[in-house]
Length: 348
Length: 57
Image (cartoon, rainbow over all chains, first blue to last red; front, side, top):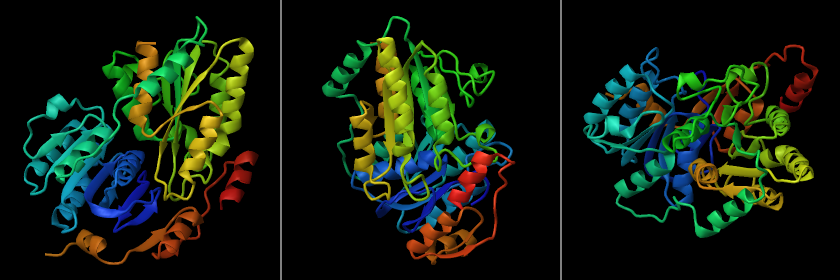
């Protein structure tokens, strides 16, 4: 594992930031660390298992590197007897490298699902042996269908979800209109932007899908902003936000000074080597943010997603309970949390 | 022909850890053989970060 590669699961052994998941027949290759964690956790949570999940580092599919690890990983999973289907989860890849990878996938003798964030699935539709997925959740669903099984995956918001969101929206002031996402997972930053962009919502970021929406200053949010607080810019000489919540606590406090902020979105990532109490590290800052808004006479909606399994050492049910008791809305994936944010911004 | 990556996937893992000791500890608890490299990241003179790194390391 090289620079910027944070996770792998080999033969059930979690290396780096990895979740406790059962063994199975689904193989995965991730040029997206938290994307790979989200994928493997969801596969486990739906009752299925992983043969190997090989992290490549998020820059591996850039045109400078050309997918060196990704091509080797595909070769290995193609030969591996335990692996029946393969999924790619990737942050935005280089155009030239993506084309070379698609050509290689066309000669793979196992089905391949491709979730290349930032790439329009229409642009790669119809490529031989590739099933394109818009999101990680969709990749999980397609992967399981491809193994010949069917699942009940909750992809849309339930009526209870919608009622809770409507209640939240009703308590906003007339000034409150903006979303601020402070994310530990870089993949979630991209996927969130992609989902909102599809709904016609412009989002600024330190890691934008479209360069014209790059924040002029990474510490200063404008309008709708989602930041990858794990980006090297913030993390030089500091522990990553998946290990320590100091940087996120500071940013939550700053965002709440802005009277136009209506929604605060936070991701929580569980698993080996992640903070042992990611919610506990931020809960006081969340409480304070909600209290300050209440004093002003309105409320701040806090949306969260948890990536992990009940086997992870952080105790997933307890982490979720702490959030719910603080009046926070909790979702089981980044995609579902973004569906909630989208509903609040577009329909609310 | 068997390649390096084939061997990696089919044989027991041996990991060299250049980083936080807890990364090695988690692997050992899963039964993986680990070699821990003696390494400490710089804190850049930031007192808060020095305290944090002391806690993490």
